[in-house]
Image (cartoon, rainbow, N blue to C red):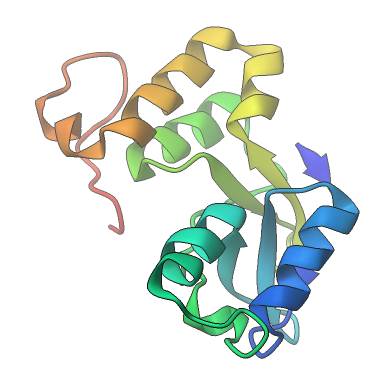
Length: 148
């Protein structure tokens, strides 16, 4: 996991977010309103939900492009449980929360790959094609649907 979740406010501009990502050399920021996590903004979100739609990133706010459905795990969760949550939710990142529900880090598929390439492969397979989850008969618990 990457300790120290890099955050940004929902009212900041997308341009400020992109500059922050470049400065920190990260591809995602946790969006917080005070201490509460309200979303995640990735570099891909900026491109697909803003630039591709001809929205001016100097004027549009983070809220307009962020993903508001945040999948998270506890800093005490084991790697397999977190990886299962990532695969079930078809995401490449989880926000890691402490006992007070404050973001303390981000667990990415790259982090998982360092410890278990096979778990990372399952995550990537399902993040690329989440619609196939209901037909999966492998070791992952697909009785949960994304967002449930």
